[in-house]
Length: 173
Image (tube, rainbow, N blue to C red; front, side):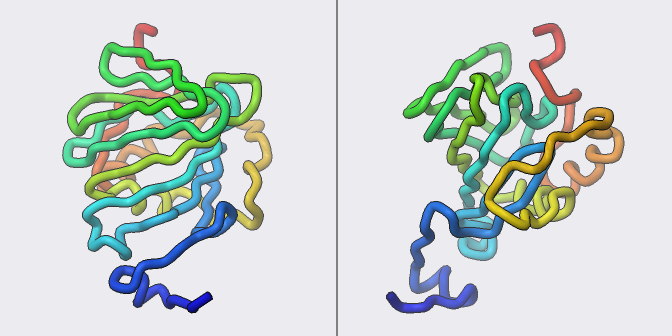
């Protein structure tokens, strides 16, 4: 197999195995960059996520970034606008820019999904808030208060999205 350096990936292409890519622990999830903004000039990107049951990101909206999900294993409950989508393996969900959305691990086991972004702005948040995963496993369970939305909001805004509420179902659900 030919070795491709990071600088060559965008022009020469590359392949990653299921356990390859830069991995981060973020908000209780494992997130692995499969194609990042450096590879595409920021035009798009894709992250593989592993989501524990009952966890997910804050309710949020991307003013300039479309986001889509393809579930590989398990169940994800995806809220987009006023719609709830219960996705299982092989299921697809789309969150268009300017429409609030979130997702939650919906089954008894962790869910695994591919998440696409166009353009790829979210990656900056993942790099700023997440921590490099020392192994391809979920982070240890968090025993403290939920994420501090007030602390995360300005970081999110710098990276192309607006946090509208805490993790979990949207307000009123």
